[in-house]
Length: 319
Image (cartoon, rainbow, N blue to C red):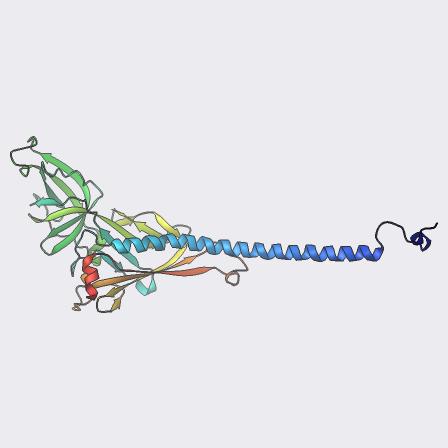
């Protein structure tokens, strides 16, 4: 019996030309849709990776700024003319700088003796068996206080002069020598950090400093956290790349807002001890571009910090 398909000239197996064209068309549509979806995914992935890079970079700086503002002034007492947190306003809208100091609770406080030389370049610390003064060395930042006077000095040399008296002596508080510190003033005089002339009976102890500012010397603009002061400048590593702007504001106890505190302008409500809250704003910029992000231009994002130091004096400013 003849195959009906064969009788009409159609093979018994395989596809007709129309069926093949339909299959090719459907396959092309499926592959095209898949390619379009993949291309869209890759575009979103590239744009998303740029956003993530900027966010992660800036987020680290934001978290560190917040933590250090909260810790500002720990172990210290600010006054109208002495700051534990202060700002330097950049001229004509240029980036600002933020200055923070604090002291660890366990840091010893040492007795200061009358200097034998220039009181602004030499500090003598008393050595007793109860206080060996081993915690201070070159490069440390020293806080000096006598009565209401407050100031900072950078230690650049240390010379120990002990009398040879063995410990313990009859009285643990007996003098057994002194440590001579050669010091220089930090550049913080305009930020409420004057160098107080060394006076007999003053107290001295080591403090930690953190100075935030933008450095544009390298291939990209970076936000620096400096903790050392050498040769007239603050030195430290970058903590965020691509930060192109850094602005700060101080909010005072009466609600006033200013770029800087001042104890010399006759306004008693914007001194260094009137600060309540610190605001910081930074703008981070991506180092690469993508045509599907920011219209193909440079992607930027702004971040803000608002924190009140936990120092008891500052928290009382709203009472």
